[in-house]
Length: 246
Image 1 (cartoon, rainbow, N blue to C red):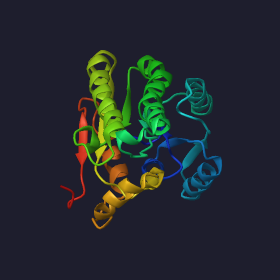
Image 2: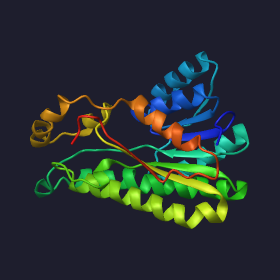
Image 3: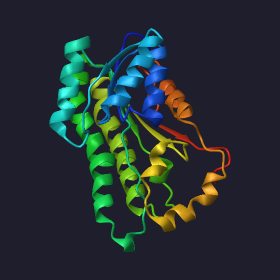
Image 4: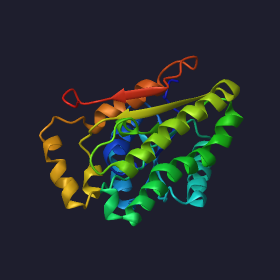
């Protein structure tokens, strides 16, 4: 799909992969709908996009609340007429060992990483089915396949996103002409690590910080590659690791 003039909803757009993807899509001519909870950051990003002659619409929302997600879609359609692409990017990674029973963090990860994706699909899919066209991008992780210290719950959420993406593709791609892609990055230099409060985990991850991580722009380019394919070609998964990551 040529993204020029297409309407793209991006969750978690205020920073990291979401922000980089918004800048990339806008540069390529897409009309980007920026959503997250941080209104000020979204407005700053919109100004940056508009300064570069791009088009951006800011709609604050919590992806864990389906009514708020549906309002994002409604407002996007009111402004631009329709929606073509959904990028389910919002996510949390407060790693901790299971025996510490940080159940509040577990629930947050399930709510944002899994339910947030499901809410996005519920909100956007009727429009894509009506259009008989579109693309859904879900941000999973290489953690869907490989456990790492303190990642039992986080890895489980990303495995759920990966499998949901595959099941969704099999159900809707041929039937409705909608492509589905799971993006699965390894270590990326974003603020995601700032959500970790467990001191033992932070100590475990010190070695990873010495590695040259991926940049958010690398993932944005991978997302653009997936959506920029002709309609006949569905990129099921993009598994992208830093060159130094084992």
